[in-house]
Image (cartoon, rainbow, N blue to C red; front, side, top):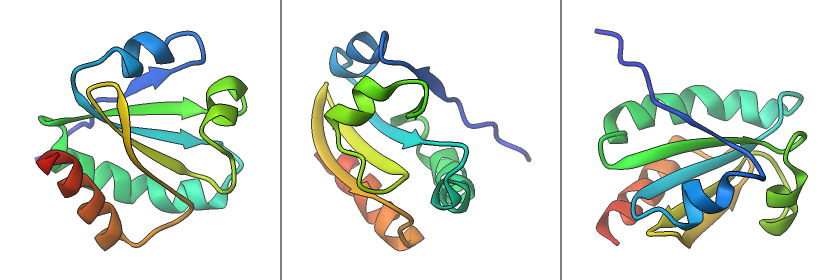
Length: 112
C-alpha cells in the first residue's frame, strides 16, 4: 500500500500563521533543490513521516525563494530540520543525518 505524505508548502509570508501560531507538532524542512544533502535526506524524511504524519505535520520551505525564514533560523548546512511544538522551536539540526537520529528527534517531539 502506497501512503502519500501530506506536506504544507511554507513561505516567508505564511510561516507565522502556519507554524508559529499552530498548536500542532511540526517538522519544518528548510531545503534547496541544488543541495545534495537535501536529496539524500528527502527519502528518509518521506519514509519516517509516513508513520508519524497523524501526529506530526510536515512543512517544506525552499530557502532560495524564502530567505527571511532561512536567515532567522541559520543557514549553516542544508537541510535544516526545525522541530516545533505549539508554535515554539523545540529542537533543530542541520545537514544530512543518520535515520536513527531523526527517529530519536521525532520521538522526543512526540513525548514533549
